[in-house]
Amino acid sequence: MDEVLLRSLTPKVLAIIVRRGADFAAAEDAVQEALVKAVRVWPDDPPRDPKGWLITVAWRQFLDATRADAARRRREDLVDEEPAPEPAPSVDDTLQLYFLCAHPSLTPSSAVALTLRAVGGLTTRQIAQAYLVPEATMAQRITRAKRTVSGVRFDQPGDVATVLRVLYLVFNEGYSGDVDLAAEAIRLTRQLAAAIDHPEVAGLLALMLLHHARRATRTAPDGSLIPLAEQDRSRWDTASIAEGVEILQAALARDQLGEFQAQAAIAALHADAPTAAETDWEQIVEWYDELVRLTDSPIARLNRAVAVGEAEGPRAGLAALAALDDSLPRHAAVAAYLHERDGDLATAARLYAEAANKAPNLAERDHLARQAARLNAPVRR
Image (tube, rainbow, N blue to C red):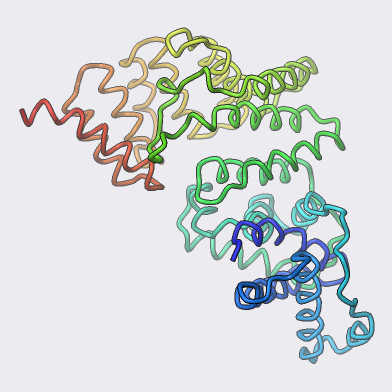
């Protein structure tokens, strides 16, 4: 069973079922039933047209559910319109579905959560981690969002800002998580940039390209993480970097700065440095100042503390870090790094071990545990 294929087809099938007349909640249920049947049937009887098979089965499931619902008997005439199995249309409705899920009846945070779960294929746990909230809280938010849009016709698409937030979070999960969604997020953002002349759309596309250019160097063959300073820059994708910088420069020239442009500017400064030692940390701090002004994000402040530590010394970085809540994700890892640079190896080792215990994924946990072991090794001798 090709799980990656199923994940890639899910949003496209969902979009078509919604477009044919199903409300979002009913369409999602129908598609999920079709996926369950695919897992059971495909290993022994793979279809020639997987997308068309899923559309047909999901539509039949929707019609069956409609007939069974006494409150929706008025829709029984849809039975006569059941389409015969046929090659699926080649039109890609995924980006349209992102806009439809950003419905005006939902708050931006609920719209993002619903879209990530239903269209992006992320788990509730992954979405909760992205939003820095407990999984139970995010589950309730998604349930409320589904309840809100149940029975609503999706003829009022949401705003660009919400769609950008969804694409950014999908890219981040694909870049660092268990499921590869990064390429799909870039593809959809390219479509959006071609359709909408918006500096923040361009900023997001530039940010994605600049980060994706480093992807091949972020992990070793055994899956262990390679920090930015230790990556082989000769293996970075220079074509993607050049494209990202060009897109960013055009966006910045419009003098409508937004958070994605600011983040892309930081990524461009990293990409432009021939070596880690030649990184222009002073400019990076300035861009983080802009990002904090735009977003007041605690994560931006945390990353700014690292940049301050590089530009002005580890004690200045620790002073910036002291103003932040120590429960922030990766706070302990940042503190460990700055303490190590300041020469306090015992504190750094303790904090690396603490950060490892809080790490959101196995690769990061192993990396931090190795840092703790490296600093503790001289003590054991």
